[in-house]
Image (cartoon, rainbow, N blue to C red; front, side, top):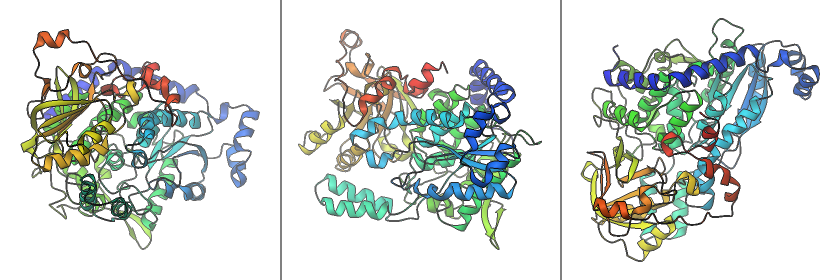
Length: 606
């Protein structure tokens, strides 16, 4: 198949812009492979500390017999998506021994749940938890005891954090090991209906809690297509999972066999064999473009407009929102998964899932097939469906046709001709507008602004009836340097109520929205952020704002002379409590959202 010319052009732009950084990165991992810290270079005292508690694996680790796999785990049993990982290490050690290898838990990383902290103070730690996870991954792998790594993580900041940290050890082969989504519970659309009724005061807390607990009801990721499940999609199109591993439910025999296969596969792609596949070579410019294409084609989370640039930087690659916007114009939307449709990720998987997605996008020249993956010679080798044949893991070809055209379509018959994640820009800065979840009749909104500095102020104004009109709600001082860039997901129900009442409503913010942000038009991640004099700090109540996903504009319709003369509004003082003050160094050093909103990467000069 011939690569689509726009995919090729964007890839060439990324390669050209990344030339110096990528060369420096590849030189780094080559040096780490040749002269970095590893078991043969450890002193006897170092090595003895490393295997002191390894039980029956002691002789093999001591004598350097076979690969020693470092397990970096995000296990905790509060977070449903990561609870299944509790039993993984003991089983993975057994499976490693089956092929003459060993495995040790190298370290744990934090895994906070945005679902628990959404709308709460802890949400201001969320984005910076990604960098904390990256640092924790680096600590885990810094011991030099491992020749490969299995990365156990799924949710919002965990996968990007694991990859950013792991890429600094990119000379090691690594495989991402998911745990899968929980089985379907209460339909997401019904859950959203009850949330909106609660926002209107038509049902109480008891009814709302019953609805939420029927939706989030067991172990596994949430079933809507938010950031967590978008992570899993991206790992598939980047070739970093065992084929088809993303959306197999936890606790099943098939899930177990896929994890077993990942352990076995790691031992086959080590540097002592003839099929060496280091992570830093697998994640190249083409793989990063594939992540963007997959995100756009499936209507994935806007959070990845921040995470993809950060992951790319860790591998010496530069990609920006202009690249994402150009790709969006070329990539068709082929999936309708809630909040873009009625079905959840289990229905998506049943309709053909990632095997179908990869096959149709490669066939249309929209994905790079010629990438180095962990489990095949080309990306199409990952377009296979895992299944059990008499208890043995086998891989079948993907379905030739979708099994549910309301959920999943081929690239030549999409739901929309573009991917629906637009760059909007103007005198208010640059932001992201996810049009794929919004009715096209609402892609352009022009209305007076009502400006807030806190999402709770918006809720109070809504309850007081102050927003019963056409309005662009502006929530500023929500960027990385202001307060850690929390998601403002709890604004979705009240803004949805206003929209359903017939008003023309939009949101403009330098904060984030969840991957489940839904139907209200929103310009998010607006950069430069308000703190430090960004344009949002010049806005006043009543200024008319024009937001258009059709023309890619984000403007305050204010006389240019008056606009230039306005003094920026001072930022509110930083909040303390719930540990937020401990992350002050990350806030102070964070760079702009388009580069990933990371103090760590900025300080490292990446």
